Image 1: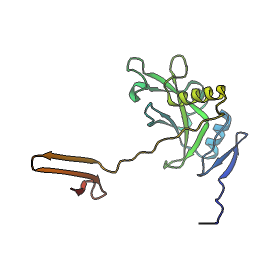
Image 2: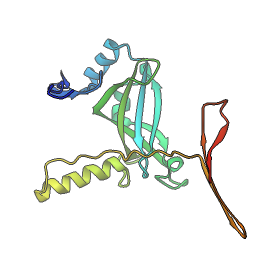
Image 3: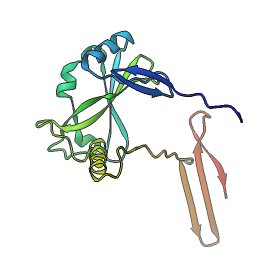
Image 4: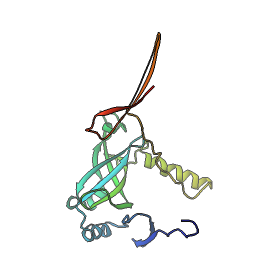
Length: 196
């Protein structure tokens, strides 16, 4: 409405840092002890470890909260990097190390779930994987800081969606046609929306 001031985002202190929240209830944690207390207080049942592949698609590994602890923060949780295009099949072993500052209660799960955004590391050496998108972004931000260009950078997804499920065309002697097809919620079968 015109003339009304926007409602400021809710602010919360957790881990000695202040965080602005637009949606309830994301909240970052600062230490393994604070994380465990958060899991108990919020009755968290699952922990979702999220990471991105080279093309920006999100992937995740979800584990029961009782299986999550300081050992995962220290050693990470293994995954096959070749299955998401990060490495070759011969050397696909990798680990995800959670970033505690990127912890939030995920509002989209049916059971209380804590989501942690992770970075990918080599399984044997625990060296950061150079082609992990988060590691690339952190290195770029450090170069910008060192060059005096900026103190921080903001990275976000490019939202894409597709209106049509199928587009077909025909161009022959005495005939030309184009058909766009989009699925509708009518029994799950696609219907042609328009034909020219």
